[in-house]
Length: 331
Ligand SMILES: NC(=O)c1ccc[n+]([C@@H]2O[C@H](COP(=O)([O-])OP(=O)(O)OC[C@H]3O[C@@H](n4cnc5c(N)ncnc54)[C@H](OP(=O)(O)O)[C@@H]3O)[C@@H](O)[C@H]2O)c1
Image (tube, rainbow, N blue to C red; front, side, top):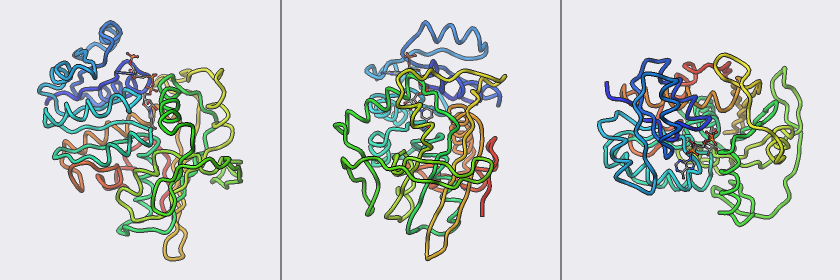
């Protein structure tokens, strides 16, 4: 079998993705802009090929993707990396999957045309909420409101997360964004807090309302819904806002941090409320099985559409969720 290329393999998330591919015995190529770090990692991982490439050098990207089966892009900011890697994947005629959590970059990707599969935000933010929402809706393709509440015990952001936040902030000229009335709306309203009742043991928590995440792009990309709101536990939002919060520290053999999460999705349609939740450990680590399982399903032909599509549109959502190392409750 041809190899899966991980672009951005030197990053925190990229390393989880490489290790997930290796655990599944899939041939793996590691790529990124830093040849020295790639070589160091290759000597630790053993059975991987190293193909350094830079996003401003299309020829190097073409060489990195030559004869590959698919590429998973873990290099952010995606405002910089997504377009060149998607274009290289198109030239190589191979599927592209990324873990982008930058709303404007996700939107640029969703708005593209492609003949090969392209799946943006195939990760904790954007991907998991979309799969839960789609599973809740079953055969329905419309809803009145979708609410995705993130209950994170803490959030120790990586440099890549901080860079993504900064680039999104700059692209919006410091304004906030929300999805209402069927469209993205930029505004200067203050962020409000409210209570959210998560399933036990997380229970009642203060959350920041309209803490807008990538689900506002992925969910409405295939579900007719005028209101999509995302919420974040105040503890996690506080960690993220604090410049002194350290990067995540591993506490187990898989390299996961002690962060626990619950994603609680509430869908209102035709006067009925339906709910789905997923619980797990470490939002970066869980992004690896999300992205790798996406590639596995695309290569096995287990897809519902082709071209550019979010997780919920591309895959059988309920079945996909069952494959993940998560505790999932569906209606
Ligand atoms: N949707 C989600 O839930 C989710 C989950 C995980 C991660 N992410 C996103 O994924 C991105 C990476 O996160 P991370 O945690 O892995 O961060 P990280 O540990 O800081 O790694 C960043 C990676 O991006 C690479 N990179 C940065 N700028 C680049 C450029 N101009 N050209 C090529 N490569 C570049 C870095 O390469 P060097 O080593 O050469 O610097 C490194 O491999 C972030 O944007 C983050 O928001 C999203």
